[in-house]
Amino acid sequence: MGVVIRQSFWGSVFAYVGVVIGYLNALYLRPKYLDPEQIGLLNIVVNNALLIAPFICLGMPSTLVKYYPHVEKDEARRRSFLSNQIYLILFANILGALLFFIFTDDIKSVFEKKSAAYNEYIFLSLMILVSQTFFIQLQSYSRVVLDIVVPAILKDIYLRIGYALLICLYAANLIDFGDTVKGLTLVYISATIIEAMHVLINQNFKMSLFSWTSMKNWIAETWNYSIYNLAASAGNSIYTNISFLLITTLIGLESNGIFTTCFYIGIIIELPNRAVLMITAPVVSREFKNKNYVEIENLYQRSSLTLGCIGFLFLIGIVCNIEDLFLMIPNGKVFSQGLYVVMAISFAKVFDMLFGLNGNILAYSEHYRVNVYFLLLSVAVLCILNLTLLPTIGINGAGIAFLVSTILFNLLKHYYIVRHLKISLFTKNHIWLLLIGFGTMLLFYFVSIWESPVLNIVGKSALISTFYGILIYKFNISRDINSFVKSIFKKYLNIKI
Image (cartoon, rainbow, N blue to C red; front, side, top):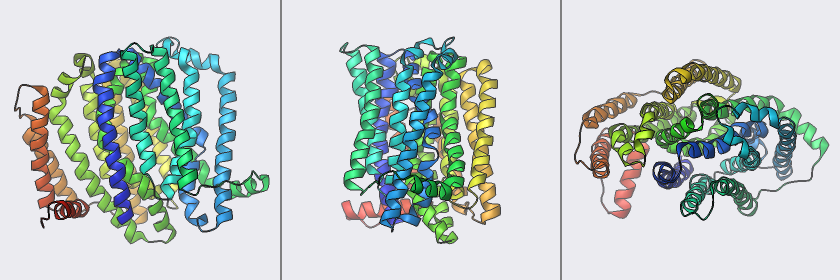
């Protein structure tokens, strides 16, 4: 797991640098200088593009991960394989743009009643959509060559710095709000251009000329898998973004702005999970090709414990500091309406991390179809719960819907993996992790050190991290975490522990 740990570590480092910038955006700059409706508008311009992007990608990113091990040693096949994917995405973008222009009035009518302001910027969603389809595909190529650092920098740092700069320019009255939305669109487009330059220069990404014969042969070979992965990618996109769309259309942009801010607080927990899933996907694909189920089970268990330890630490920090956190946010009283959204999203993300490689294991096995069925069922549950709860209890209903569907999705996948692949996840260390995690949470929830919210968060977080970290290390919950800690102490402090 050497390359996996290194790439995951650096991917997580950049992700958490991005968290600092993201917190500056979400919890200070946006609430201070934008009203909730403006926040909701900026969010929906981006999220509508992200919602549709997987449909345009046609399942190509996952197909690349699945089949790359079969073509990586053959230069001609590899170039043809990569080229055909890019051409298909290009064709899909052209078709999607034509449909968008034909049905523009119908699309605008969906938002006219509750979120009419979005219609002024709806074409910007199309521009972000096109750029993101190519970014996702190029990022997938970086994954298969085990180089996720630059995509991580672009996604987690570059986009957020661009966002922060635009808000600062708006706050200084150097640009108006319309320019801010247009500037955000340019930031997304430029990220794709930079990633394209990176893979062309540093990752030996080469294309061949379009060949209809090659395209037909390639489609015949990968069509079945691509169709299922199109459904999976679309389902994942709906699962991640549909709540924003439903809140915007059923309640309004202001509620979406509050939900967006609270959702962001919760999802910082999953950032290490993203890095691990990105870098382990090609590893899992190769191990299935070699029928090495023992290594897959080992990777499954170790990643679950490592991610679970990290996830619980952040969950405890959020739960124990949530009230002080809202006191720090400009207009925090308004955004505190989403307190239970933060709680629900945080618990959902920790649950996701404990079952970490569920999706990758099914997606790159011969049972990949089942993963799609479970995902679509979970999406249906998410949509039904949202439609039921949003009109009655507002944005907190969206949080509950997300938590319930996340638990259902992971339990279904885990049950199938245990029953049909005979790959187990849980060990006695998982029991110790749950006891340590929830025990630490209960111990520190009612602790208050200072009256100042900032000092209280810093003090409690330091105590929580020290207490929790010592227990995790002492009970050797994660071999990878213990090895990493030992190496840090030995290398930088010359202390053997």
